Image 1 (cartoon, rainbow, N blue to C red):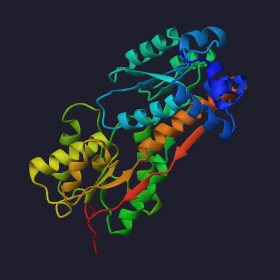
Image 2: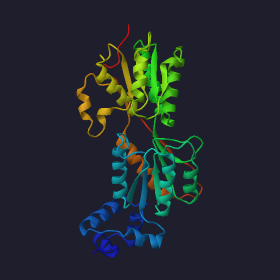
Image 3: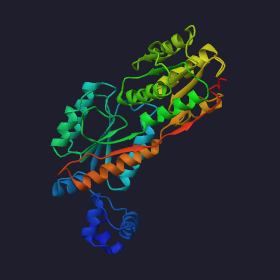
Image 4: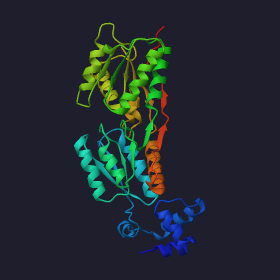
Length: 338
């Protein structure tokens, strides 16, 4: 079995620099290439437990998501894990099943496993369990979802601005009665803030009869969408604040034989057809107009931020927040009203 000394001899890079690289710390690009080439040639494997005994690091990271079967998170976590692996870290994937108490338990288990850091897509309304990790010196990066009042590193997208811009675009196309079906997470609230401020900024009323909040329970989004469509003098367009509600809109469209956009116009935050194994949805024409998130960039940016935090340490902790840009894809699913 190859040792770090073998890597040193093969690469011509000092053992101390190789150790820095294996700990996820910065080295020059030239040395990085030499080290990675030597590691690959020698099939060198770092023993994370033995390494941890010397450095108090296990070279393991926890990734905690609501549901492994979810549409949204697998491509993000796949990119996250790949990037962390390239930098010498192993990822422990944890699924809390959209159960808030289980989310807390999963973090406690990861602390017991002595992970070096955690990336978390939280479902919680408070951050006490996350603050407990930070107090122990375990960095946490919040993925996609922020928690009000919690000072913590995070990677999100421009939820407010993207929604604001998309609704303004629809107003420019003549829509005045715009409805929305939204979820309960922080991301949904930010998207709805953009939705409402776009209407108010153009002097339009925010008609609460046209706005429905739903939890992620089977059939709830479909029911609310049908209610809006069935209203006399109802909305001409419905904004779906997340991919799950968008999926409900797609089911209503197919089950009820809706003509899009003749019967109703739609915008969905996220494009179902962009998710793995969902490309067939692009065959249903017209596709729903969508605000598309950079899934792989979310995974990579989360990994980069966590690696940077691991290098900086938790002394003088000042949260770093990264907000990525989305892209609006306007399709014929939004009717122009003259």
